[in-house]
Image 1 (cartoon, rainbow, N blue to C red):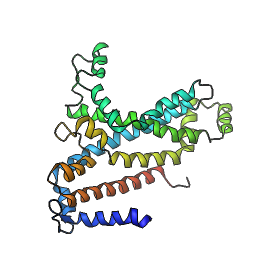
Image 2 (tube, rainbow, N blue to C red):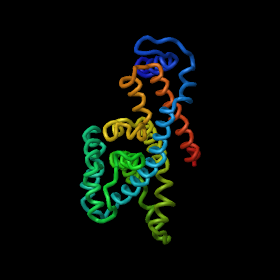
Image 3 (cartoon, rainbow, N blue to C red):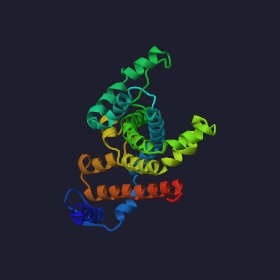
Image 4 (tube, rainbow, N blue to C red):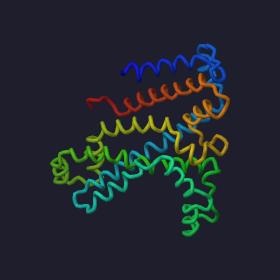
Length: 271
């Protein structure tokens, strides 16, 4: 069953990536599609956009999830269940629904601009969805809002399994809250942090819904992700399924590279 539903499609996709043509009129071209990737300006732009999302959004989201999970693990905090539910809810919200809401929030006359104008932080509305820089910020904000609660659940579960006597001993030795966080909490959560970093990296490299629904890859190709480019190659432009499969394998290669880097940065598993 695993071979049928996992390995067979992967092998077929790889074989498809060695072919080129429009629609179903495909011819075998060897590794020409892979060479084409390096000369394709749209593909290179989508890689740059996706890497920008990755290197900004994933660290911010991981740190934010860690911070919130520590706060919500405080035994003296009241209404913990309400707070945990509220922060987790975004990740079970419909992707399309929340993307449309963010599109309205970041509109020229949206609530974000109205608030910033009201408190005099800006003198004129920000072109959130039509400026290349601010459009990326809007996408990163949307992804972070949706997935922070999802990662927080992993950290919260791990924190509740940490022996409280360790924290009590540190407190008796005079350790501050910051020292406790960096010297005890972070090392104890290291395997979970590595896991969430890798899964978040994979999710960001496969980013599609937010970009498609909020900016549709624009302005120009300023926010287009690799996955949206695959969609465009298959269904928007003249269909080239072979080249689309090649771009898909580029994502696989990037996931492998980033995962190896994260394992190296995290150190040996026995540390």
